Length: 118
Image (cartoon, rainbow, N blue to C red; front, side, top):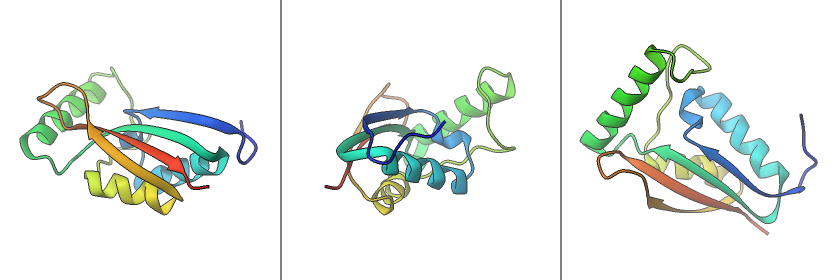
């Protein structure tokens, strides 16, 4: 299903992008940016894979969850990025990005709030 360009005020992508390869991540974020109205918000929660032991805990959890079938990946492997990588992906799609840590203390979850530039 496709939405008209500039037709949505907000979109949430929570804990999902790492299940796709980098090219698909770029496509999904690009499509989200396209369908957002000027000033619209894309909320993305993802793992900061550069956050040391916390990121290792996230990766272990995700590999176990996909291994037992609790979650599924679109491809043979998960595709994590560091916070700078997620920010760059969103920025390159024409979004202004701010971020903050979220979730349990022992995980490396980050909430990215990305707003379509006017």
